[in-house]
Length: 312
Image (cartoon, rainbow, N blue to C red; front, side):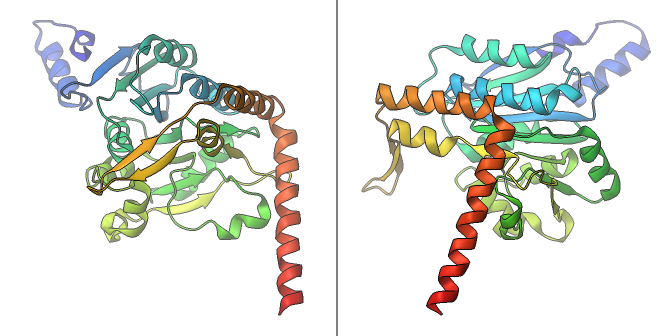
């Protein structure tokens, strides 16, 4: 594991260096979970680190990482990833598929194959095991539609100074940005130190976004300002593919008599293949789709305003 990265040497300086590294090791031991590590996990040349939470859908993960690497992450060489994969909607039989995908996109990282699904536990684990000054938080069901400039990200966090900042990538057109309020776990950049402090207060049985937005996590000593990455061509920057994935597999929540939440999954082959074809097309023509999608949103908003005015 990680201790193999530390060189055993009898000199006092080497012993001190080993002690410092052991003290700062990520907390990644847990019963029944499987951990995969590769590369130099102690490389601190990058100010950014990628934290990914996802479930058992490698085809969607690959599409997500491809789009974000092409339009964002290529600007940070040797970036490290901390990823959690939950066994949903079924157990993970082929771990090597996920390992290959992550190794193609990142030169170093840690993957945890969780023994049981829990979104809050996944977010808590990736945040608490991060070490970067800035975290790029990502889930496995998003597509990046427009190029994201590194200098804008660096400038935003430079202006923020010591204040905690969340730089959110909008999923709506410019006409709907005013409706974005509060903390969100959509693709975003955030101060790593703030995320690590917040992870210590997360519960495993409540949606982490709701915990942070509506609970004491955003109390006075953990305030976090939300800023929006500037939108180009009036269209959204990221697109949520998760809702299409759920519909294509006919996934729905079921509340049992014991008040325990479970999921019903049915996978029709034709609709799922068609769904993946659409997503590949969205990724390939990301900027064009962003303009089209943003225009459609603006037309819908204008129609609602006209209808409300006529009915009033």
